[in-house]
Length: 428
Image (cartoon, rainbow, N blue to C red; front, side, top):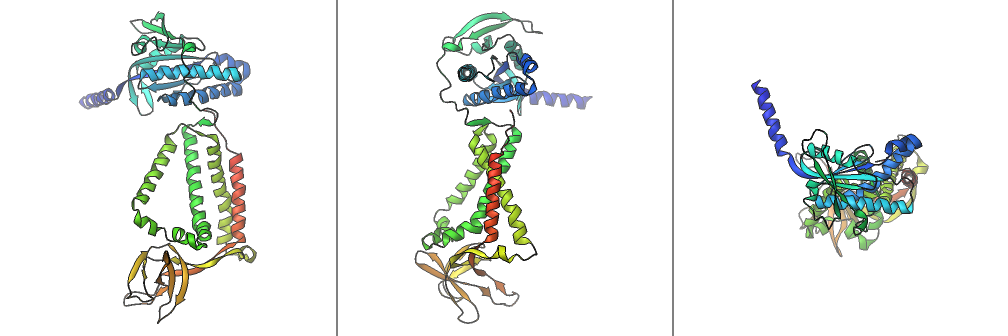
């Protein structure tokens, strides 16, 4: 029994710490039940979806947080009461504007706003403030904004065109609640900076899908760079230093890798946090995912099949230069001798431009470009020593773009078109 008391006391302390002042905004589509009955579930769902797509960006614009959808409305929380009222006014202004352009699927919405203490836990809000906001909103009519006396007390009534409408006693309450009505039609325009049709609200599942598309698109771009682009670019000598030996640039600016990592993490976090993204970007990301699928479906079996495909392996294009791929971290020497001066160090997977080859004694050396008109020597194979077997350090080859690569890229383009044209948007 004592253990249960301690548990309850701990829960009370946790809940008390989670209690904060908040302003709740609730929207409710007037006549939604009748609309579903008259037009059917599909048209009714489209009405709710249109409501959400118009309301979500407005709430975000005024620093609100969408707590949940309520079937035919939205619950949002605001840290500042004035922002909640501005959002409510902007919602009604936007709905009225869109209704003038096209009345189809533009609902009439009543809005209730109430301020009080609430228990805020993760993605939800609990407490009496929510119950009162629901009761308040239900007393309104379509296109109306009702505000509680507690919220009005934090506002300049003239600025927000607040007029006292009366009072009512919510069920289960001992005291009456004062109600104010906002005459939003005379308020200055608040929707000039809100972007709508080029943006789409995203639910959690859609965010996960878009994140997968984003990662797949980045992955296939990086693969295409490693497999093709760096060779093609490096075939032109003036680009060789930038493409073949990037650590030379990074050595002069060591903050660049850290900055790129920070930007990548920030970009991924922002992608997950945003509630709206451009529609064309969604289609491009889905297209990138389709490209990845189409490319790999053909590239993997052609390149890793035990069956010889001579036609597919014949080259369409070959580079003018030979390239030296670094297999193990090694030094670049001034002369083709292990004891000569070390000019720099190259890392595994670095790609260097070959200028010459020599074998002075028993080691073959590659002359490679390491700077502007500056060359050095790296070994191909190090001979065995005591306790060390023979080790291949570099591999020399020519870049070949084969028919199999062309086919894989064409399959990838087909996948991109499929993904771009078949993006499925779920209703919010």
